[in-house]
Structures are given as structure tokens and as C-alpha cells.
Image (cartoon, rainbow, N blue to C red; front, top):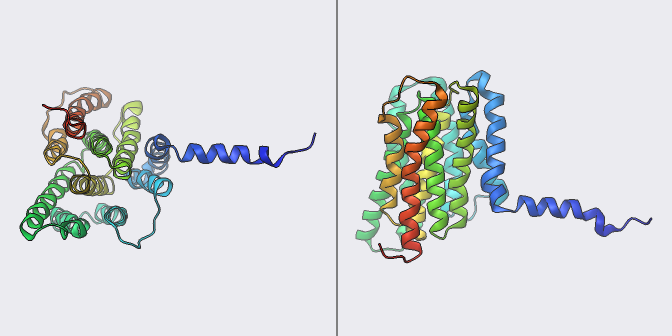
Length: 285
């Protein structure tokens, strides 16, 4: 039988189609990469790098790592990578005074990311939106940083925040921003799964909490400014790390605690997606 060139390309074509599927790009791929990263680095207490590893693979599959032109989405990617390196450095240094500056840096990053969009509005409106975005990202960075030494709470909050942000952005008609958020949620879900299966805590540190909070916060802000994500979905999302931090947990196994935290935090994630659906679908309340 003569080999046909057509059949030689079939496996490659099918693989490319699979890699181009949004569910693979924002779900399976970041989950798998994060799972492998967390397992490989947990012995040296750097499993928190799973978040940025999962996010990076989604950027590679769904977008690219080029800088020019420096759009808002590319600023999110750039700041996400920088925040992962900064979080890793802070985890190693354990510097309290540097950690105190993180919410301020997050707020400044929000203004810089949204700068071009804000310039298209009158000064008063731009100032209002800029302050709101800065406050939102600062609250997320502060809230997730409170969970830096609480792996169970951090993993549950991160999964819900990523899924809630990504789901709301996707419903709000922004495919790329939706993939960014869902990639965070999928990567955090890998961390959470290890907690549940091993029934033990998996250290994350600021290499986990900082990029998660910054990328999720910036994604939410840009989705409000450039898509149909309603602004009042952001306070719902901002409550996720606060709930994970404040809720009292029973003296049960890590598995039971994770399930309880996931149930509570996903309630807020679902709420953010729901209010966005009502607005994007023009459904009256």
C-alpha cells in the first residue's frame, strides 16, 4: 500500500485542533501543568509556582508572550510573570515591610494596566474608574496575602476566585480574559485536589497568592472596562478571599475543611457569574 501524505498529517491536525479547543487551553492544560508543577516542587516548598505555570501554558496556547503592542491583556501577562517572581522572592526573604507594600503595588498595577482605556473617558470618569480598579486589586492582593500561610484556605479561595473571574468575564463577552481567569481557577484546582487526595496541606506561599490575586484582579477590572462585566460583580469576587480567611473551620481533616471552604467560596463565584449573566443576557432582575 502506498502511503498517502494526507494521512501523515492527520495526527498533527487532530492534535492542533485539540490544543486550540478553549476547554483544553483554559481547563485541562493549566490543570495538568499545575498538577505536575505542584508535585515536582512540593519537596522544596515551591509548589505555589503551579499557579503561574498553569497560567503561562494558557497564554502560550491561547495568546502569545509578545509585548508589542502593549495592550491591556499583554500587560496582565507581563505583570503576572513579574508578580510570580516577586512572590517567590518574598517567600524566600520573609520580609514583612515589603509585603505591606503589595496592595499599593497592586493598585498601581491596575491603573497602569487600564491606562489606555481610561484615557478614552473624561477626566472625572477616568479618575473614578481608576480609583475603583486600584482599590479592587489592592483588596484582592491584601486578602489573598492574609492566606499566605493558610494553604487550605488559599487553595479554595484561589480556585473560586479564578473560576468566578473567568466565568464572569466569559459571560461578559471577553473570551481571552475569560480564559485567563479560568486558567487560574484550573491551576488552583490542581493544588486543591492534592490537598483533598493527600488529606494534607500543600505549602503555597506568596508565589501562589500574589500572582493569583494580581492576575485575577486585573482581569476583572479590564473585563468591566472593556466588556459587559458589571462593576458590582467585583465586590462579590472581592469577598471570596475575605470569606476564606474569616470563616471558622471545624477540627476535622484537611479534606473536610477543603470541601467546606470550597462550598462557601464557590457560592460567591457563582453569584458573580449570575449577575453578569443577567446583565449580558439583558434579563431583567
